[in-house]
Length: 70
Image (cartoon, rainbow, N blue to C red; front, side, top):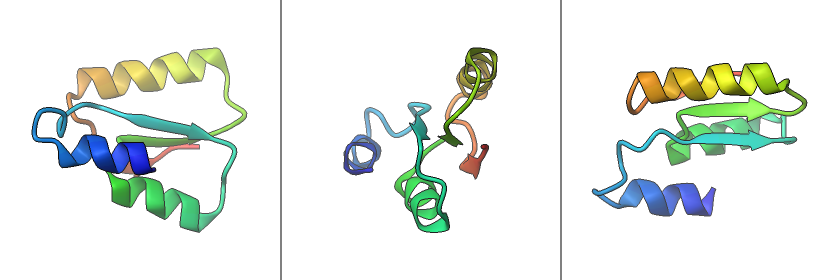
């Protein structure tokens, strides 16, 4: 979360699509990730195919939206 906040504070990297992949599934963790600027908040376990799909979606969308996928 701290790294994400730092990246988002830089004008150079504000539009960089970033996903969080974690085992944390609680609402506080999700909210913190989205509030910090995550393009996606993904929770483990996930398949390799799902991860590839999500990465392609945020790359295609540019910055991506701030919404949660699990």
